[in-house]
Image (cartoon, rainbow, N blue to C red; front, side):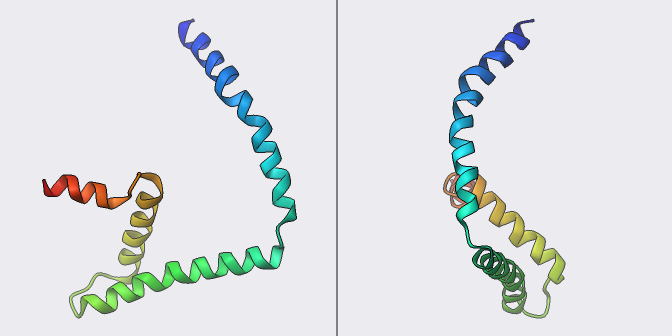
Amino acid sequence: MVSTGFLAAVIWWVIVPQYGEAAATLRSLKKLSLPLVLLVVTLELSSLTAYPGLTTSILGTKRPHYATMFRIDLTGLGVNHVRPWGLSVQRLALST
């Protein structure tokens, strides 16, 4: 019973006030140029496929497969977008 009340309170005070802003943001997405969005997505995908190739070329003969490097680079990108300051904070914490 308490958890249901807590969930209702969170929905009422956190989610409902943000709905108006989200709706306005979604309406503003209609103004984007489709060719420009497709260009940006293409460039982003090409950079995601180029970085593992660059990394494997730098590592030399004893290097992991391209798919492994792609997964490593994609995971690093995800961590950098989720954690504040990305992997630098993690590396600093591990070094001390």
